[in-house]
Image (cartoon, rainbow, N blue to C red; front, side, top):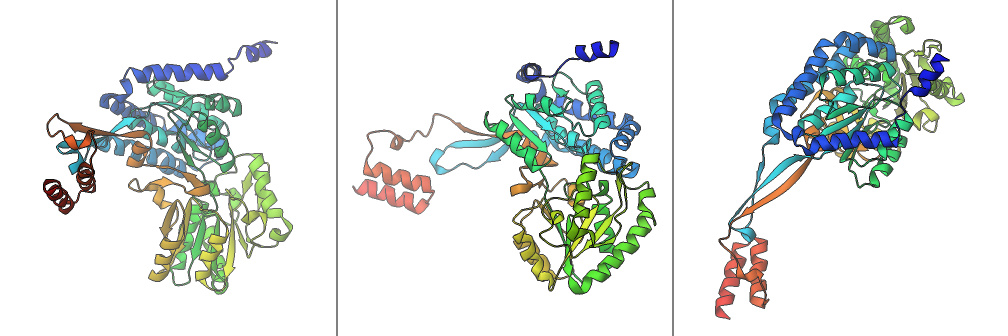
Length: 493
């Protein structure tokens, strides 16, 4: 009975609750608190302190949610977040400075600048696969741009979500930055509100719901999605290095549960056997003879995803194509690194993003045919990878493959380069962030033109005449010769 009473008394986060949260944040934003350089610096330093003082708890939460190895948690979640904070602290003052802009003869004399101003109150909806990085990295950008923020972590990583809510409340300014936990009802209530920007990380199905909700208020969105990221493997390469880099980008990133994870490989029929043999050798070297016993592989996030991946493996025309791995432990939600060779392109595994430890290899007669195969898929993935020493092939790859990001002779590492934008195109998303791109994503670029009262051109004012029109057309075009001709024509008229 006591438990029932507690459940009944538990506060429900509904649309009214969401309205209150947004109102409180908007009231704080209107005071101008978040716009100050000092507030931004204070919050970013507090986040660094939070990460420094709570690394063991963060690693433990990630272990509870995903059995994520400490190596991956410390490097790919905590250290990358620290790097984002430090970069923002170092560069933010420069980012905030007005940018001078050129003016023209049309407004002479004048000066102009572009001012980056915060958008207001923004909404960050995070994902479960990198629950700290994908939650707090956008928040770093939103803070550095001077916004008030609501963060909604994924309910599919409950330990991380709970810890995030506690740490953000303990370390950051809760009058301007809030975490709302929950699932679909809480997210839906929040999406009903008017935001100044929404950044969502996840899948295309939910992204359409987010975008439809945002459209009601004309709210701009950044959508970080995914897709089937291909890897083209040529034959003139260092096979051992290439194999290792594919492995670390696939299974070394949350056991394939990453948006930029290699989804499938394309190589030639003649080279496929060598590639498979190299994978077998290196996978055993990294994860042992029984990878289900390895402590260096994450587990599958939940039973639904385990069943989904099992269905992809067990499809009749696919199950016989497994050439390495395939072991499963349903009780512990484990699936071993699995290589599949010559999977039919019309199979389920080739129709949807895998988001797991399965890696199909598709073969072609010539490596140049890889581009046609990628284009025929109809999508634009979040990432695409090429391993080759052929300059012509590299050039064709860069010129013809449309994806959020391209990497030649490695996988996934572009994510760590803050001078590169991270984002998708088409079905893999819209907008980008990381480094200054994060600051820009949460800023409005306000155009400002300054003029005095001198140099008032009577040409602008009625009564309009052909001579005024000719001279103004020359001024607008910026042509000195045209201006001279117009003036001469004026005086000769």
